[in-house]
Length: 387
Image (cartoon, rainbow, N blue to C red; front, side):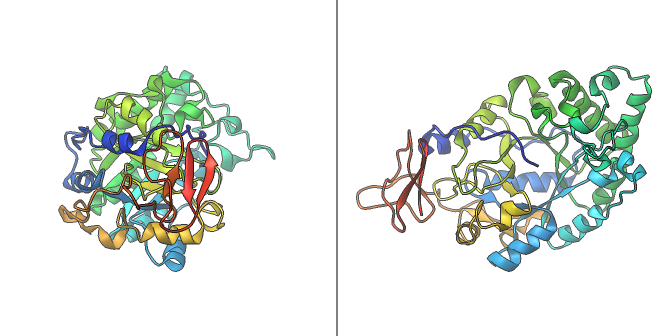
């Protein structure tokens, strides 16, 4: 889902790479987190700062990557959207969890978001049809009024919805599948109903969601990922396992998004690993690999040849800095792959140059300004790239 615009890239990659070598422990906030969740976090920790895991939203686009690029992403993203009771009432149905279970059997990592259909109040007009009911503009559901009235009917509907999702998450837990779980995504944007009334109701809803799933339903296979950058929206280090952002720069702009990475690092005091949980354009991987993983949204973002050219995709997926499904090792048993690659190049001495698709200039850039292959092309004040 499209989100807030990228921040300008104004940090040198040398300082950026140093920033990722911080102090995240990889410990999970749920004291009863199961072994499967711990093994997945161990895989992410093992590779953090050395490799980034590749990801793709929706398995149909994962298949497209496999068929057209020749490599398969490590992570596939799924959506619990059509398990929302209000959407079922309008006739929706879903087999997404079945597809996620099939993906997990192949050794892939499962990520889930939830475009939570508003518990009630969908306008269902020509301009705002029922299937848009996760958008603020498509519903009159008031999250602030609901969350601040635990004895009210709207609060009961929130619990009903969480319980419905718990049923699906339990299926994955029973099958031994851990989940990169990103609920209430992009809350600070305000375009989804869970963020429409500001930070306080959104954080209260997040706390309720955690308590209901973890303490009431005993769901222990989740890695909890917070997905907003603003300080006043942050629920705290004791409430999240990872921090993340969704970034959609202009098509073909492969800037490595250091500004947003730095903001997230400051947000959590460098105590959590950091992921790019949605992107339209894969960030430059040739200079450093600070994101734990990136996940490309589907449709035109992956296959139009503009956001990510096929040649760029092939170079990315064959890079030693990027892990694909075949390089994950036996991570489910705690023996994940990667972790020991040489630190990616951050600059060059006399006679060296940036590789094809690598960064070759920009304000604050201290690396090579010539290209081993291709020509250094100006993108913006902060970024030039070998193309």
